[in-house]
Amino acid sequence: MSYRLQKLSTTKSAVALSVLLALGACSSSDDNNDDNDTNPEQPVDTGGELETVSVTLDTAQETPAPVGVPDGASGTADVSVDAAGVVTATVGVSNLSGPATMAHIHRAFAGSSGPVLIGLTSDDGGSTWTVPADARALTADEIGAFNRGELYINVHTDANGSGEIRGQIDSGNATRFTVLIENISTPETLNVASDSSTQPVPLSPGAYIVHRNETDSPLLLPRDAANAGLESVAEDGNPGPYPAAVPGAGVFNTPVGADGPAPIGPGGSYEFTVQGVDGDKLDFVTMFIPSNDWFYTATDDDNSLDLFVDGQPVSGEVAATDIAIWDAGTEFDEEPGTGPNQAQRQEGPNTGDPDSNTAVGSLESRGQSVSLNGPALRVTITPQ
Image (cartoon, rainbow, N blue to C red):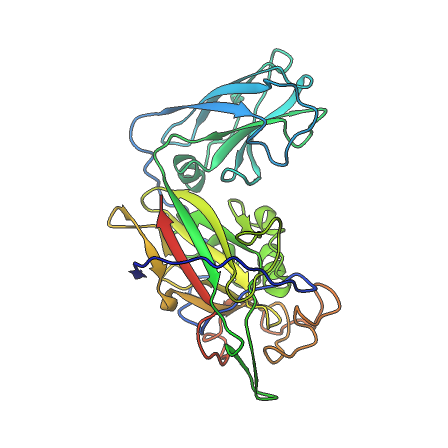
């Protein structure tokens, strides 16, 4: 993995397109298509002795924001995970809008919502919640998520069925990284062969994941056919289905300086934060918009970007050779920048004929290419 250290300026701008949209940059690279299956999970170092993490729950951390909650609604918890993934937790809550109806341990970084890992139980009408004796142990990947502060507890009430208070389970041992994705395309970046014209390459909302998979990025699996999240990003620039399709996936969708989700054009950028510990890796996907189902992703040996090298957090611009355009294999490919079933021109999402080759892979591996006069994408990772 190569990184180039440099200071970058962020230009705040956004481009409005009429449909859900997408992202672009240069050509393609290695895609490790020799192994399309998820390998057995690898052991994770949990840091030696059992560590208990104290957690504060409140309304400010909950997403979406709860309604009708009394001042002072809160909770406290003590959580520990042993080397085998067995979770112990005790959660106490007070001053809620009504009796707590459910409590769970979820997986997602702060500010995002994610799937339930463990349901908690109460023997006193909802004031205190614990992990039941028959709860499953965390997997190796989920232990990694615990170590990097990616798990949280939330408590539900009748008034706030999606959650009234929440607390991130963060031991403070992880490094926080800011990830900046910039659109550096110009009006001359994409060559359109049929009419000898050129176009810029817009960028769309996308998805990301921090993981420890040794062989491939979970965002790309299964490689024989795109998962629901990848299909939605690659065809329509919509990352919404990703968190349900790939546990641990997060979404970036709001441009820097904007008030809500939107695509970006030249000069625009997305920024998000993640946490990681030594051995963690990052991948992201975002659509190459002037296409039917192409997207950008990392192309290192395991299709991910290392967050640590020799035990130290990485810092700087990701080398262009470590990011490439891939094909999701979900829709028949029209000429880039012209097809009636591409995002800027299609009548609605998920239109177009299916692709006869359903394998997810780099353009190079599929015998495809695109003519670009320069990069459209720049990724910078900065430890905090």
